Length: 312
View 1 (cartoon, one colour):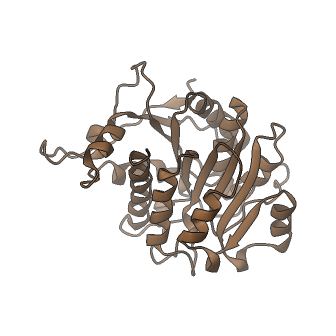
View 2: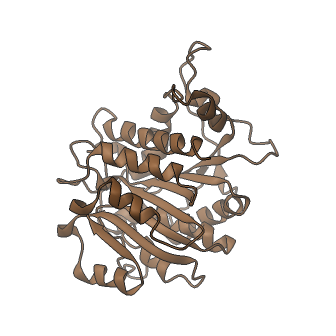
């Protein structure tokens, strides 16, 4: 069985002078040229349920694509944005086996070849177990990377009865035998949702953390550069956003980040030349309201792409 399955997203037909991203993204996967970026779905929430969260994030890649592909290119940086989208591929979704560790390793196998070529993977999760599959691509390729996580939770919990889950991806990365995780940086943490032992673990591993009240554009920009790695793997967990603006997540946050800060952080990640991959996790369409969270997730990806189109 192939590791990937192709997906089809219906995009309404529009006038030639009003193109949409879904019409511009390259759909011919047989081309031999090297794309600048690829979109890959990881439709699994098995790790969320193991961690005691509510199921539904497995539906997120489809929901995010539906909203993203209806969006137009940026009007002010139009030519560069269109050129980027035309030099991208949507390679489909990972074929999920519903064995978390196996699915994570298979995602890593898919991502490794892109990372080796300098192609930027954009992964649509899925629960936050997505992040270790994301990291596994670096380990598979033998590439060292720092890790930046925008999240309400630290996600360095131990395995549960030997099982990986949505709360363990960064402990898995830090302790991985490849030693490819050079530094773990996390911001947006909710103090009522993080154990002291987990913060101690991050510090003892050489990482850094910031709480929600310390998280702003200045501190995010600082963390983006607070490492000596040549690469930066970036992962955004949607439960960092306030639940009034992102109700459809696995673990809603009553005092989360405002969406404008979240979106700007995605744009800055896109512009940062050290950022070599990006994932967005924990969108839960089953608990969404009028596609509000899926739309915010799509706008997050759109802003990452805008930043990427502006790299010099």
